[in-house]
Length: 42
Image 1 (tube, rainbow, N blue to C red):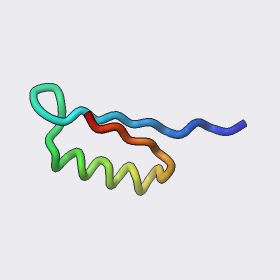
Image 2: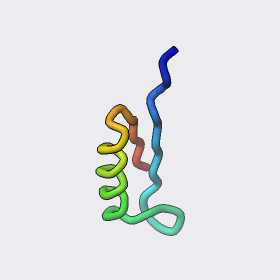
Image 3: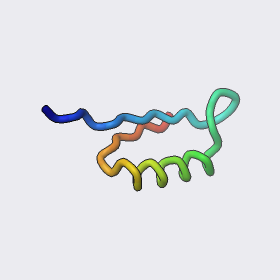
Image 4: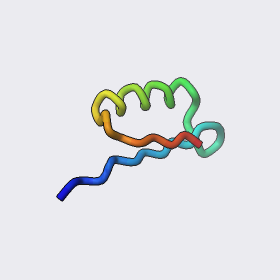
């Protein structure tokens, strides 16, 4: 049985999201930790 790919969604912008600098850092860190992850940035 295979594990489905990790899916991560990040909401940028104010007031409910994070800024672009934090988004880039989060994608870098998560991509290094989970290379098969799928990212959606809204």
